[in-house]
Image (cartoon, rainbow, N blue to C red; front, side, top):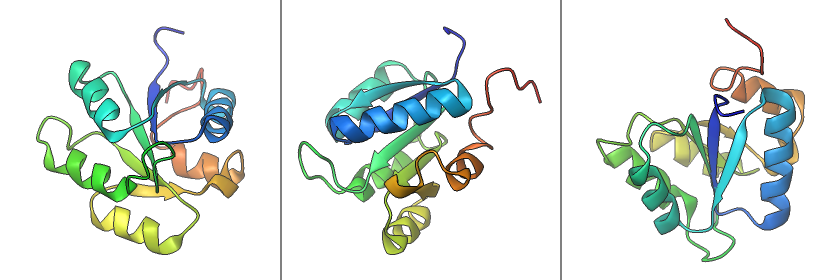
Length: 133
């Protein structure tokens, strides 16, 4: 699936990364890469601009405890990356509100993974495999 959209998932634990990856693959036919830290994500995004259709950022990084909102702000402040769609992964409405204020698209929580809400939120960015509209 070389032509499939790619998603970069940042700061998820292994279990959540697997859940998100499976749900995105099943619903939209996309490939998901992981980045453990903000620094790794930035390095990946700058090395291959245009490779990713979406960046999903955990509210709090699993490996380093870094607040996801910092990466949202960093990406939106970088002229080379500012247009890249970004979503926060969080069940907390206040965290989602802060992220959208910082420039992220409305995201989803881990409890939404695989649900109709999950698909509805991601549909405008990641069309299902075979959808040519």
